Image (cartoon, rainbow, N blue to C red):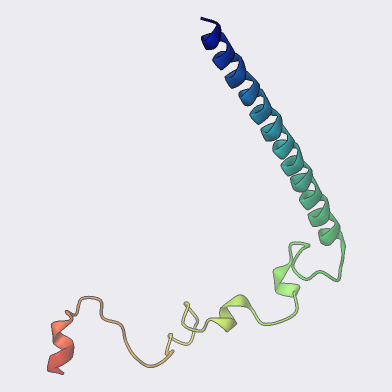
Length: 96
């Protein structure tokens, strides 16, 4: 019966150490989250950080869509000129 008690005590000690480690990780993560929030607020207040103040249209550089012209642009999505036909079977490729 003494061995069972020792096993339970050892397991309890191990779990308490794990709880302490998890609490420490949780505290560190909370600090990182808080720091990220402070950093974001600082960036929003900085006029030199484009888009952070909630006005992405005033940010420098091309619009995000301009970097991916095949992603719903107004130009009809000419891209590489190949039309995609997902209803076409693979066997049709060899017949063309």
